[in-house]
Amino acid sequence: MKIATFNINNVNKRLPNLLAWLRAAKPDVVCLQELKAAQADFPEEALHKAGYSAAWVGQKSWNGVAILARKAEIVVTRKRLPGDPKDTEARYIEAAVSGIIIASIYAPNGNPQPGPKFDAKLAWLKRLNRHAAKLLKSGAPVVLAGDYNVVPTPDDIYPTKSWSKDALVQPAPRALFAALLKQGWTDALRAMHPDDAPYTFWTYWRNRFEQDKGLRLDHLLLDPSLAPRLKRAGVDRKVRAAAEASDHAPAWIVLD
Image (cartoon, rainbow, N blue to C red; front, side, top):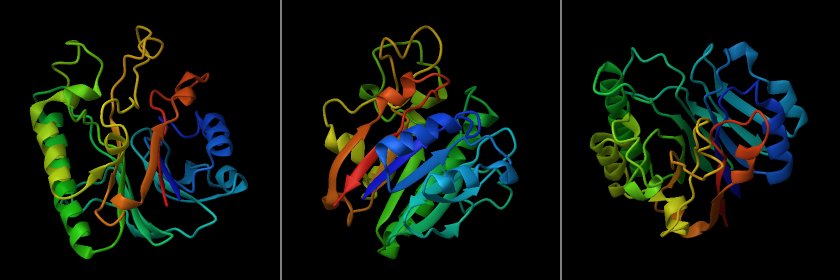
C-alpha cells in the first residue's frame, strides 16, 4: 500500500501536474494540502476520471485539505481538528481507507514570529498532539500525513542562517514535533533515511531548488502497529522540477 502526501499549492492551477504524477506514481492514498479552492471548486470529476475517489474540506483562496483513494472507499471520520470550536480553517481531514485511519494535515505557517500567527501555530500543534494521543489509545492503525510546517531538526534544512528567524525552525514548534514522536509515532522518512532524509520543499526564489537548498516540512507519521510494516519511503523530487510546479514535492511511503 502506497500512501503519499503532497502540498499541491493550488489544486486547480496545478491539476495537470497532479494528474501526471498520479499516473506515474500510482499511489493508493494521497493526502493533499493547500488546495486554495472553495468546496464547490474542487476538481472531483477530473480526479474520478483518473481513478481516484476524494474527500475534501475546501476554503476559498487559502488552506484546504483532501484525501484521495484508488480502488478504495473513503469513510470520513473528521473534518476538523478537535479542541477549538472557533477554528473554521480547512486544515484537517481524517478518514478510514482500507482499514487504516489516515489524516491529511496542514498546520499553520506561523509567520511572522513572534506574534499572534505564531501563537496560533503553537496552539494548533498542541491540539494536534492531544488528538494524536487519543488516536494512539484507540488501537487503530493510523497515518498522520501532511505539511506540518515544522523543520524537525537542523538536519532537515540545508546549512544556512537565513531561516533562523522563521517560524518553521523555532525551538517551540520543534519541541512539539519531538513530543509527538515521543508519544510513539514513527517519522517514516527519517526512519528509512536516518542520515539523509530528503527535503520536501524548496522556495521559488534564488534558485533554491536547482541548488537543492531545501527543507523537510512534509511528514508521514506511523503508529506503532504500522511502523514494522514500513518497507520504503521517499520524495518524488522531479515533480518539483516541472513547469508550474508546487514549491513542495510529494513524499510517500510503502507499507506491506
